[in-house]
Amino acid sequence: MTVITCIDDLKALHRKRTPKMFFDYCESGSYTEQTFRENVSDFAQIRLRQKVAVDMSGRSTASTMAGQPVTMPLALSPVGLLGMQRADGEIKAARAAAKFGVPFTLSTMSICSIEDVAAHSPAPFWFQLYVMRDEDFVDAILARAKRAGCSALVLTLDLQILGQRHKDLKNGLSAPPKLTPRNLLNMATKTRWGLEMLGTKRRFFGNIVGHAKGVTDASSLFSWTAEQFDPCLDWSKIARIRDQWGGKFILKGVLDAEDARAAADFGADAIIVSNHGGRQLDGALSSIRMLPEILKAVDGKTEVWLDSGIRSGQDILKALALGAKGAMAGRAYVYGLGAMGEAGVTRALEVMQKELDISMALCGEKRVQDLSRDNLLIPNGFFDTYA
Image (spheres, rainbow, N blue to C red):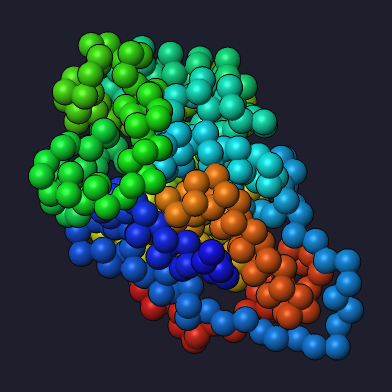
C-alpha cells in the first residue's frame, strides 16, 4: 500500500488512476498557465519564522467560517465534474468533508445533483451558483438548494465568459467522455475507474439535465451550456440573487481592491480572493499576492478567505497569517478523490490539518486565531512589485 505523506503523493495516484482528460481538467489553467503556476510558486516565496522555547501543549486548529464551526479554517472549493474524477465524486467528497468537520461546496456543474448529495451527506453543504441567462433556471436551482438544506450560497463572479483551457479542447473534454479511439485506449488502462463508472447512473450534469428547458441529453446539454453563462452579470443581478436566497451569501472570484470594497459594501458574509485557480484570466496576479491589498480595502467589513494555490497546511498557515479568516482548496482534495475516492479526500484533509498544526507549533503559536504577519518572512517588495 502506498504511504501518503503529502498532497503530491495523492496527485501522483490521481494521475495514474484517472483518465487523462479528467486529470488534465483538474491540473490545468487557461492559455499559457502563468497564473495557474504562480498561484503555487508565489506561496513558496513566503517563508515561516521559527520560534522555540514556547509551550506548545493544547493546540487547536478549530475556527469558524461565516459563523460555521470548522475543524480547521478550510472549505472544499466548488469543482465541476467531480463525478468524472471518481464515480459519485460529489457524494464522496461531501461525506468526507462532513465527517471531518469542514464545509463542502457543490458546483452548479456537478455530476451528482443537489438532491443526490443531500440524500447522502451527513451534514448540510454549501451550493455554488453560476449565473445563467435563463432566470427561470436560476430561480429553480436556488429553490432546490434551499429545499436541500444548503447552508450557504457561494456566487462565482469570475466566469461570465469562459477562459480557454487548451488541454480540455485537445482532449475533447465531455461528460460522459466521448468514446474516441484515443479515449477508449486511455480509459482501458483505468480499470477501477471504469468499473465504478459502470456501477453508477450519475454520468451527466445532474443539476442541469432534466431541469433546464430543452436539456434532455448530452447533445442538448452542451449547446445549452455554451450559450448560458451570463455575460451581463452585474451588482443589480447579484442583489436579486442575494435577496432571493435570503441566507448566508458568499462572493467568490474577487481579485481587485475596488471590487473587494464593492463586495464588502454590498453586505456579503464573506468574499473569496480567487482567480479561479488560474483557469480564467491568464496573466492575473496570484491570489496570495493580492490578499493584503484586498484585506486593506475591505477593512474588516466582511470575512476574507483565500482560494487558488492552496496545496498544503503551510499554505493555509501563510494565508491566515496574512489576515485571511479562512482558505479554500480545490485541486488538493480532487487529487485525493481521483486517487482513493472518499478515503482520499479524507486523507487530503488529514495531511493538510497535520501540516497546519505542526507548522503552527514550530512558529510558536497554539491557535490559528493567533497567527499574524509576525509568523512570516516575506521578500522585500513581494507585495509592491506591480503597480
